[in-house]
Image (cartoon, rainbow, N blue to C red; front, side, top):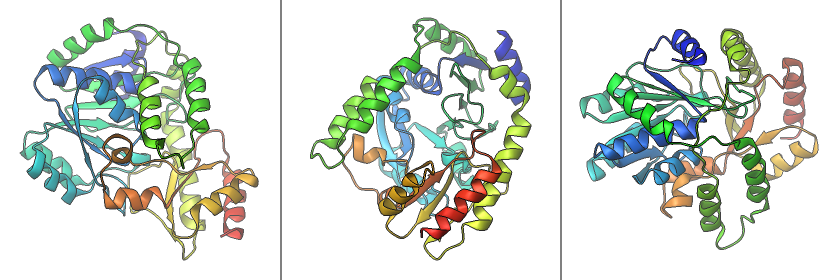
Length: 337
C-alpha cells in the first residue's frame, strides 16, 4: 500500500483497496474484471451521473436501466425486482444518489439472489461492508474533493484486488482536468432542442470518458483528516434548506437519518426552468441534474426518472458556500417562487 491507501484503509476500516485516477476509472476496472468473470449484465439506476454508464460501456458490458423512487430519488425496490425477473442481471450498481442511501430491502434482495453489488458512494461519505465493491470519488464538489481528483475502490476479496492492481498498471497517466474543461465547453454548446441531441450527447460522453492511473493525491490527506468536520458542516447546511425551504410547490426527499446530502436536491412542482433562470440571474448557483441515462443510451421510457428529470433542483453544500450565504439564498428563492 502507498501512503494514501494506508490512510484510506484506516479511515474506512477496509484493507482491500486500490487508489485510482478517478471514480470512473475505479468503475471501469471493476466492470472489466466482472466481464472477464462472465458477469457482464449490469443494472444501473436511470437517474445517475452518466459516467457510470459510460464506464460500463467502455468495459464492454451490457446495460439495463432501473427506475427510481419519487421519494428518495434512488433505486426503486419494486423496479429492481421486476427487472431482475425479466433480465436476470448479474450486477447491480447501488448508487447513493445526491448522498441519499438506498432502500435497505434492495441489499437483502441482492444478497439473497447472489447479485454482485457495486456500491457507488461517489456522492456520499461512507461505505457499506455488505457490498462486494464500493467506489468513492474525489472529483469536483465531492465530499473529499481533491485538487488532483482521484478515486478508490474497496473490494471484499484479496483475489479481486490483485486482478484490479494488474489492470490498473496497464492504464496510462492523464491530466483529466484539461479534458474536463474541454468537455464542459462542448457539453454546454449542445442544443437540447436538436433532434439528434441524445445521440450527440452519448458520443460526447463516451469520447470524454477517460480511464487512467493516479499520478498523485494532492490535498486528499488533509481532506481525509477533516472528513468528520466536512460531514458536520454539510449536515448543518442541509438542515437549513430542509427547515426553511417551505412552499406548496416544494417536495423534500424522504431520507434515512444518517444521510448527508452531496447537493441539496428537492422536487419543484412549478415552472422549474423559469425558476432556475431567475435564480441564476440573481447569482444563485443551482443545477437540475440528471438527464435520465435511459434517454441517452437506450431510448426507452422509465416514468419516475423522467418525472424527476423535469422537477429536481440541486443547491450547493460544499465548502465554497457558507451557512450565511445559504440563508440568504433561501430568502431569495422563497421570494421568487
